[in-house]
Length: 56
Image (cartoon, rainbow, N blue to C red; front, side, top):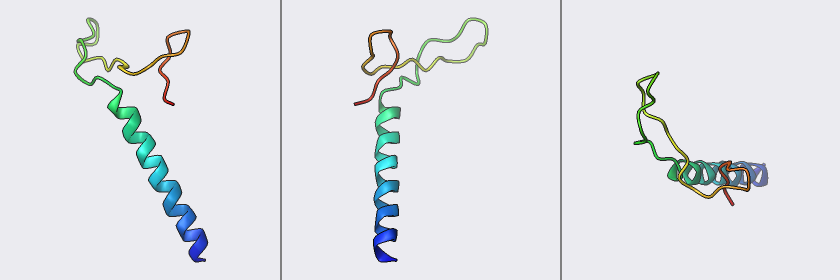
């Protein structure tokens, strides 16, 4: 049971790290959308050929 618990803890830590990486690439102070009146959250990280956001 200890191995299973460690695997779960490692998986959660990995996911938390990836989530932090993702949000570090989002600009939450983007321009205000003209029709909605709310700020856009543009991607500030790397992109692939078609312009989609990409994490390594």
